[in-house]
Length: 113
Image (cartoon, rainbow, N blue to C red):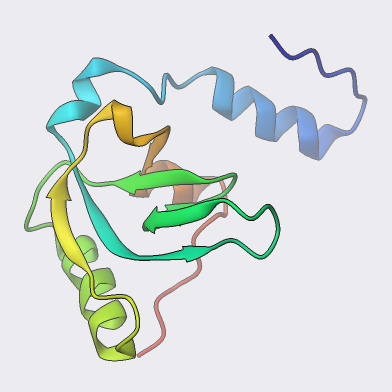
């Protein structure tokens, strides 16, 4: 358990959004994510193996052919160093967040073409 005491309105708003969503729910096991070539995070040295947002939460999509999922995979493929593959998400992979929730939290920037 972690206890955070703060009067910072931005942090309170951020934490409220996390608390209102269960990002480890079994229902997310039927979603999809993008597996990538692993690399080490510069900030914490954790290996990143999936498209992630925010504090290392795997971005997930309900539909395997979601336009945004396919667009992200295509951008990563063009980059050449990520070798993206759309795979089924399972909560054993780590905490997740839907694309829409990550957008709402401001964790996702628009894709540059």
